[in-house]
Amino acid sequence: MSDGPAEDPPETDAPANDDRAASDLRDLPAFSDGRLHSLPGEPEWPVREVAVEYDPGWFVGGYDRVEQPDGTEKNYYWAELPPATVVVAVADDLVLFVEQYRPTVRNTQLELPAGIVEPGESYTAAGARELAEETGFSPSSTTLLQEVWCSTGVLRHKRGYVFAEGLEPVDVDADSNEFLVPRTVPIDEALALARETPTNDATLEGLLLAERDGVLE
Image 1 (cartoon, rainbow, N blue to C red):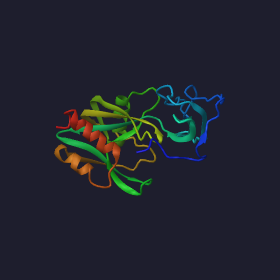
Image 2 (cartoon, helix red, strand yellow; image 1 turned 90 degrees about the horizontal axis):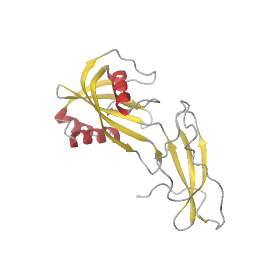
Image 3 (cartoon, one colour; image 1 turned 60 degrees about the vertical axis):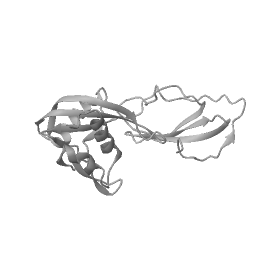
Image 4 (cartoon, one colour; image 1 turned 45 degrees about the horizontal axis):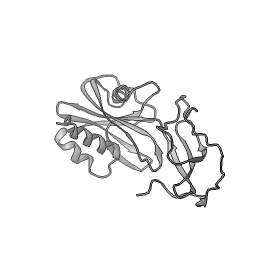
């Protein structure tokens, strides 16, 4: 599988004396909330140019023009989104899901509660907040199962999987674009149900991690 799509312009030989400065964006705000770009380390391949082509305030799209090991250059396109949290919430041998229509893929999905991590929040704090907003239940305990980078061939986007328990009912305060139906599924049926199409990566990964860590029992 390729690290990313081959994009225009086509491959060319990099000039031997090419000294164009390439800003890596890491000290510049990425989103309208002031957060910086998510760049975890120094590039192993020289970056000759960085271009931001689309910036509506909640995600950023652009490309890095990179010198490859054979000396050619290519544009590697990326879309950057703020980190997200995904919650595996369990109570009374039940897993809490939300059912919602996804216009992007034009079907209704059964998903784990999830949402964007706000500035200054941890994955666990964001998970507790999103769980309450989407389902009307607040957890007494949250644990980070795993942090991952998502779809690294094209995205700059981190996701944290959180396990939540000790659920208590609270008032629901859903976002204006959230039309959700909370659903509960027996623990021993949750993974099989999540594998039925249409499904999504975040729900499957969250349940598999929870099962592997022994909290989905």
